[in-house]
Length: 479
Image 1 (tube, rainbow, N blue to C red):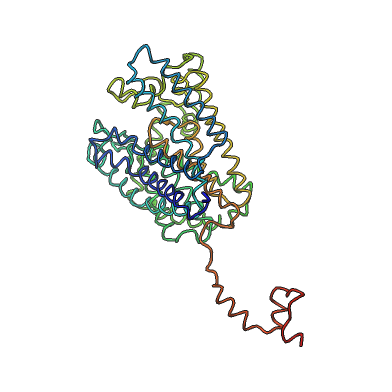
Image 2 (cartoon, rainbow, N blue to C red; image 1 turned 120 degrees about the vertical axis):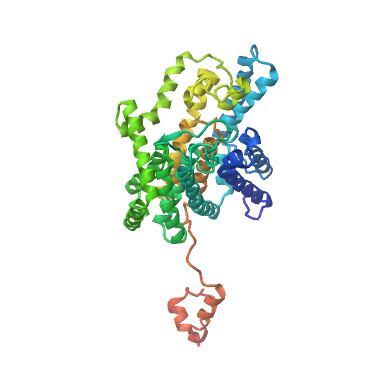
């Protein structure tokens, strides 16, 4: 049985599990906050069994990736796990070491092969369908965020996943709304993903219905305004700014740019007149101003500094990291919970510093270089797709490239979106040879075409139809 055959039942099961991964990514925060708060900690790893089952089925269908990236990742992963036992053996019992290091292993390595597996099983129509749902769900997500924005910080809508404390505040007594996610970082990643699909659909004719684009565009603007988060604004802005690369590499790929820009300006003007947008924008601008004032630099400099802060912190801790590190998983919130009973950062909040302190300067640096290498490689592939007229891979990857390089993998939501969106970007490259991933215009049936041809005269067949082979008769013309 050919594993690439769309009728292969194993491949279909893998696609269904990828869809389950997507839905759990969107809803696991709601499960932890409102539906099953007593199971908040176990639900942190609710997607792990799905990933393992995907891998098992992929091995069975012979589509599991065995490229240099996956092989090198496996080597780094198992060496890091072994070294973690060496570092922690004098201080913790074996069971506790397995628990902490096991979580660190799943946080850093377990989900990453999914990036390379998704393009082997997802078809262009699957990518398009995921985009449709991503845009459609922006509407209820933004409505929920508006309700959270208007609710008190200690209201049920704004409860945390652990049930302890309150959501982080933005400004003027308003929280950073998290929607269905455990924290606002989920909104950051999801809105960036939706922005990528929205920009792509606005530049392509007939991808989705106009009402879907209008509803998603309005909801996205309102959601960004009431989020109270600088990261949400920055993530969506990065996706939109990637159009500059598209315009430089292939201007013809955005031939509807002027029309889309005009519609965006009109929609933006309408949305900005709504009271909830004005109030949200006031909170958001206050948040920007307060941070800029406290850090004594401009808003733009603050955003740039926030991006590079994680890199610089890693450089500073590199000389002080123990050779074997402090142990895999020690720097994650869950690892700290296992050891101290509290959600905290025992090593560092920055991802690069955490990796170097956990796994040491050799294996930690190797993993960071692996992540940087993957980002560069996939980025180049997406640029190749742009040259072929397919802009969707770049738009999607622009929302996941930085989290994949420097995002915190300890929080499951950041890890999930970095992996899923990057895999989706690679899967979108499967449409490079097509003029458009969108639904094509209706094609006349073969029967109808045949009827048209039969009404032609023999002379018309010779003028308009394909040339007849020399060993065939030309009908009445030869008589």
